[in-house]
Length: 356
Ligand SMILES: *Cc1c(COP(=O)(O)O)cnc(C)c1O
Image 1 (cartoon, rainbow, N blue to C red):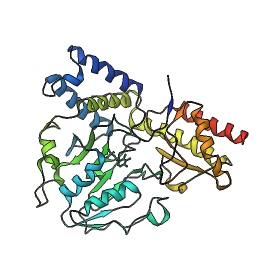
Image 2 (cartoon, rainbow, N blue to C red):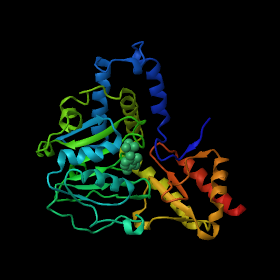
Image 3 (spheres, rainbow, N blue to C red):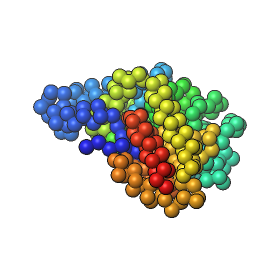
C-alpha cells in the first residue's frame, strides 16, 4: 500500500533506507542479532558509525578541519548547545521564522543576541531578507536555511566575516553547499536524512574551546568529537538508517542530482499554484523554498480548503495540511519524494479546479 507522502517531518525516506533497516533490525549484517539488540561497542556497529561519518563527508564534500557527529535531543537541543559552546559576548540571529526565533530564545540565556536587525517577522516571515551587512562584533551568525513552517529558503552560502551557524534540518542534502563557509551545520534527522532520534552536526574544529563557561559533558561538542559520537550509547537504528540514505543519495547521483530533482519538482508545483485560479503561494517569489511549498486558497474560494484536503486524501495523498501558523496547504518535497507524487498533486489541483 503506497501513499504520496507529503509530511513535513518525520517524512518520506527512500524505500531503500526503510527496507535495508528492516533487514538489519531482523538480522544485522549476518550476525544473527537484531541491530536493536547489538552492543554499540561491537566492531560491527563501529563500522556503521565510521561508514556513516565517511559517507556524510563524501556526500557534502566536507573539507579537512571539520568533524561530523551524531547527537540526541533533536535540532531543538542544538538551539542551546550552539550558544553554550560558541557564545562569548554577542550573537547575530537572522530571524526568518519560528525555528529561528526558538533558536534565538535559547541563545539569550547565554549572552547578548541581535535577532531584530535582520528579520522578516513584521511580514509574517514571507521572505528571506537579502543584502544585509553581517556585523563583525558578534561571535557568530545563525541562519535557518529552510524555514519548514513558512516555506522560505536560503539558497546561497554567505561570505561572512564571522562563523556561520546553520540549522539545515529540512534542506540538508538537497543541494551542494560550500561547507568551508560555515562554522556549524546542524539538523534533526527526520526530514532528509533518517528517522527521528538522531541529530547531525558538522563542526569546524577550531571554533571550540573558546568560551569560559563550564559546559556539561554531554552538551560539549568536543566530548562527542573526541569519542566519535560514542561517549554514550548512540541511537543505533537512526544512524544505520541515515547511512542507508547516504548510500541512496550517492547511488542516485549525489547532492547535485538531488538539487536538480528539487528544482524540477518545486518548479512544477509552483507553476501550477501560480496558474490555478483557486490557489496562491504564501511567500515572495524570490524566497520560495524547494523543500516546503506553502500555499493557500484564494480568498473567494477559502471555504473549499477542507474539501480539497478530502479530495487529495481520496487520491492517496497524505500530509498536505499546512502548519497552523500559515494555514492552507504545505507540500514537503524532500529528496525521497518521487516526481510522480508531485505530478499526482498537480493533476489533483487541475481536476479540483475543473470541478469547482
Ligand atoms: C523540524 C525542525 C526543527 C525541530 O527539530 P527537532 O528535531 O524536532 O528538534 C528545527 N529546525 C527546523 C528548520 C526544522 O525543520
